[in-house]
Length: 561
Image (cartoon, rainbow, N blue to C red; front, side, top):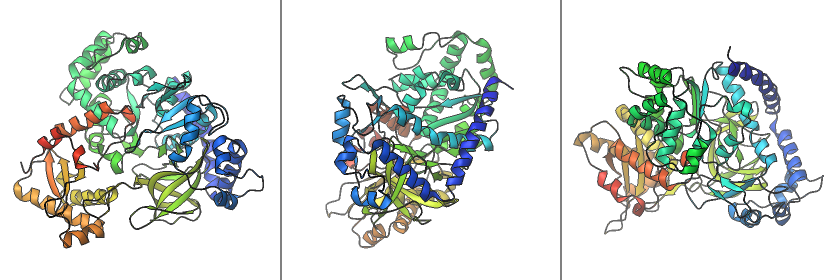
């Protein structure tokens, strides 16, 4: 047994004790939630933000008093304290001064910053131990080889006080103890490479130096990017491994090159192994890493837009949803393969669940962890060790079951992820349902990537949706018409308001057009270049304004082929 597997086995014993404690509190979650809230009030109740909100600090204060005293909040409500913390003021959201400002990587709205302390960074890792325990129990060979963990840029800019601003996944990766870093295939410096093409190439080049048994990412998008990199740069990747060089497309700054000095040694033996493995095969992840056991990422909702790349090019033995998390905190712990849901992280976040109206908008009414119902959709409201109180994350979730008496749920869409070509309030979830029905009826289209946007109204004021689907399958005119009609019909079933407006001729039919996978790749890669989030960027399936559909992408649209 190699040293990594010995270490992994020892760590699994420690994680097992933590998991059994978590399993016990999940049998009756409300006392654990009460204890967590009291602890947060005791440690964070006298910060500037808590005082301004009127968080009750009396030791007798209970959940009811807390909910009665503290209003629901949003990012706008914490913005004054974030700004003060950026300029060095202590005790704003959490006690002390931040060591890092984490950038959110959502799909809409302006950039948001969350100040993090060392205490929060440690608490942020707690659900990860539960997740790894469950995963390693199901997959004993999880750490047989190295782990590929694809993270966001650790430092994007610097605050006025000199504190770094970046993405929490990269920040945690850089600060990982050396004992744990030995498990990982890619050195931390690689994730600081700013050029997207050079970044993806360097990730692939360093990962190819090792066999992999486990790969982790935020969404499906980085896995698709690595697969494209292998396909496009096979010769230079093999040459770099053989010669001990790094010759990526794009650019590396002098500092980036210096940070990687000594990371690469000539390895002709490894190059020959890879050449042998891929002989007669594509130069693809499944051929380069044949013992890959598990891929873990968000692979549902918009985050699953590139899941076909994992199925086709990575071919892991198992797929496990990553923990559902936000910069503001972990939200659930997935316990099963091929299931997007996970059990609520009740020892890390104090949860409330906001009811949504028929249009999916928040009502202001919340319920507690023991009051949710299976099958219902809610908005997440969280109180966390980062210093947020009754904070609307603006994520819509669906409750799917219980672990003990603690709910399991998964992300559906952002609250307000709605398009209206007229007054139909068609959401991203509605489009997800419609495309899934299309793929079920037309299996050869299954897994194809898609985009939707509202077109400008015609002269009579009638709106409609434009849609693009990237598929290698050629469709003749009849099949393309059938696909458009089926998508339109299933959308009417998913959203009755859309169906009513279609029947009233207030909306025209969805116009579904084909686009080449290469054109979709180009659009996604351009988005990555424009986003500082890089590997942590969330994929987009809804474009809210037709003016934001790039001209080059429109030019690539075509009808039946």
